[in-house]
Each structure stands twice: as structure tokens, then as C-alpha cells.
Length: 192
Length: 340
Image 1: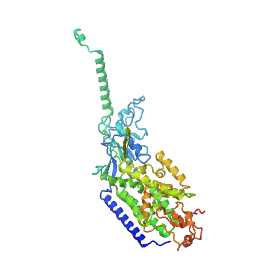
Image 2: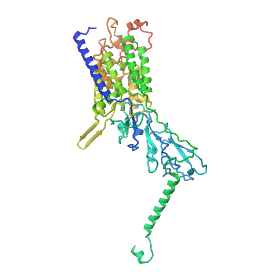
Image 3: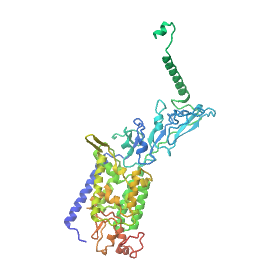
Image 4: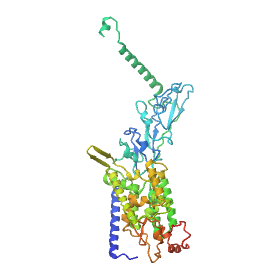
């Protein structure tokens, strides 16, 4: 191997130094406005449940799930988010169709149970996360005035892989995916 | 109306009456439904029921994010040591498997430096965009490492490269000119990726319009992410299959010809401080190394810094190296290097 000439080594060394300084400088510049603990979340006020949360997430089963806020839920027998109220009723008058295409919204009767009349009971509605694909049909159906708006879409951080860029955020037509600081759900100051 | 008044009896026309009746029925139905079924707030269960509270899983903890970056740094360091000092293909293989397991299957390919090109572009173009520390570290550390010790990221830490390295069975020799020409595709792809990440595409020629917002092309067309997630859109899985099948006979096609980050590393590694060297004072100049290189990175029995993917196959095939490490020449290696 021919030894590199002094000049060649000097040029290479200078280029290397220049490269390191440039990289360091750019990294430093970006670090200035970087944030360690900001993550993406759905802003329920902006979300129009357009179905893109289901299709845009980089995971095949979206990290966005419907979440029921039990403090707001009416525990209704005739839940518009659970059953398709326009579908054919059974012999007791309860509609047979379901809103959720994945059958991910489950309910169980709670409180004092009247075994004879289903209309006289209260039901607890729970989202089965293994099934929910974040399509938001139940969220839409639960909106006031039909429902109490207790259901909402939420990015579940237990599933989110924090990929390079939230693909749903890019796709969302309503800018409903916002950066939030952890803990809490206050939108970040510089939000795109 | 005039007719009914003149008759002396208050009569409402049938149509209006029907409408009122209908309204009444609807109202009665609606009110009964509301009173019977709808609760505007949670009912009072009288203490027989306790309200569950919805869970809100915490985002990845800081220490887990730090772990990602620490493992990247450790990976780069170990890869540099294995390739430049230890010169061991077996050890590098173990590192590759570790990289596939953690950065590939566990982290599902995210965050990766290749995709980070787009985040960095977006952060530079749009000051409102918040980039995370992890992305910054993942983008800049392998670049800095390339300036110091060459493309050790490609050789040791990148899960995409490791997958292709593992499936490589019988590398074909690609003509040098073709190899070099295809290598330019990386920079075309890099340009496209940067453009789409920073600006998107808005064109209007006459009545023909194209309007594509900012997109992360590299992430949308990544060939191996589907493998790591064991799912994905059809086009990604199809491209992945093509690259894996093709990669059995062509050495790391994605890395050499398409990877935009590989293009950046290739430029920087041209002035690297240390790199894979094949020197006559230690080796024999027998040419076995050149035959063993599946990436066409050995020209005139010297490793080309820009295209060397630091896989250590040349060392594994070198009789002198094997002797040096206490192996009998030509044997004892976990990897049997194809010799022609």
C-alpha cells in the first residue's frame, strides 16, 4: 500500500474536522428546539372521526383506540354507539345490529339487575383494545345530542412505536393529532 | 280555510292535521325514548357499583428512550471494535442478530437514521416542527461515526442491512460500472425524500394538477419494516419480498443502490479517520478477500472506503487473518465464505 502523502492526509483531516463541526453544529441547532417529552395525541375537540386513524397508522392494527370515559357515560340500555338503532329489533324491541364493525365495544349489565326487562337495566361499555382498530364509528355515534360524548379516540402509548413521524398526523385532514407534553394533555406551544 | 269558516265549523284540512299528528307521535316517541333509555349523566347506582376509570398508558419512559440511544452508541462502538480491531466476522454476525432483534423486531424498525433524514429536513425547513432528542441522536451519531471509523453503522447496527446480510447466499459479481451507475439512485431517492418531507409536491400544468402534501417517502416505501412488524400494506410487503429474494444472490441491494442514508455515509466515509484496510505487510495479496467481498468494495486488492459496508467477510476469508486469530487456515470459522 502506498502511504498517503502528507498533503492528502492534511486535506482528509480538514474535511473530517469540517464535517464533524458541521454535524455537531446542526445537531446543536436542532437540539435547541427539540423536546424530550412531547408525544402525539388526538385532540377530541378537532377530531372528526374520519377513519384515517384506522388506515394511516404504521401499525397494521392502529395504535389509536376508542376510550370510554365512564364518568361521562350514561350507561344507557339503548346506546347509539353500541347498537345500530336503525337496525331490525328483536322480539324484546332491542335493535340487533351493532355499530362497531370489529365488535370491539362490549357491554355488561351492572347495578341492580332486572332480569325480565333489558330496558330497565344499566350497562357498562368497555372497548376491547385487541379488537378496536380506531375507526371511530362509535365515537361519532356517541356525539351529543344522541350520546354524551363519553367515547373518544386516543393514541395508546402502550402500542404506539413512536415512529419517525406520526403517519396519522400527516394524514389527518383536521390537524387533530397534536403534540402534547407528558404528563397532561395540554397542546404543545409550537405545534404543527 | 274560507270554506271551513263559512260552514260554521272549525275544521282543519286533512294534510295539516296529519302533519300535527305525526309531530305529536314523533315527540311522544322521542320523549319516551329519552326518558327510558338516555342518561345525560351516569346513573346513581346507590353504591352497588363502582365506576371504573379509563386507563391511559404512559408514553415510553425517558429511560427507555435513553436506552435506544445508548444501545445505538454501544452498537456503533462495538461494531467499530469488531471490524477494525477484532476483525471477526462471527462477532459481527452476533451483533447483527442483536440489531435485528432490538432495533428490528422489538422497536419495529423505529426510530431509524434513514427515516430521520426526513425529520431533520422538516425541522430545518419548518421551525414550528418539534424534533425529538432521539431522532437527532439517531441521525447524527452514525454520521459522526462514519467520519471517524467508516460505515460501521451499515455493517453492525442497521437492522435493514443485517437482514440483507443474513439472507445473502451466493453473491453474484455485479459489473463495476453498473454498480456505480445504480449507486446514483441513492442520491435521487435522497433528493426526492428530502423534497417530499420538507415541501411536498404542488404542481399545476394547465388543467393537470398534482397536489401532494408533505410525506415521509422513505417510511412509506421501506422494504423491511413489514418484516419487522409482520404486517403492512401490500406494496411494502411485496417490495420486501423482492429485496429479500434478490438479496440472496445480490449483496445488500437496498444498501448499495437505494439507501439514502447509505449515500450520506458513503460521502462522509471517504475522509474517515480509520477504515477497513487490507495492507500487504499483514496480508498476502492473494486475492481471496476480493473474491469474498459480495459488495464489490475491493478494488485492486484495496478496500474502497466509500462502498465498504464493513461486513468483515474479507478478514474471514483471509488465511493470514485466520492464522493470526488462532484458526487453522481456511477452517474453524462459523461462516464459510464462498470462494471461487
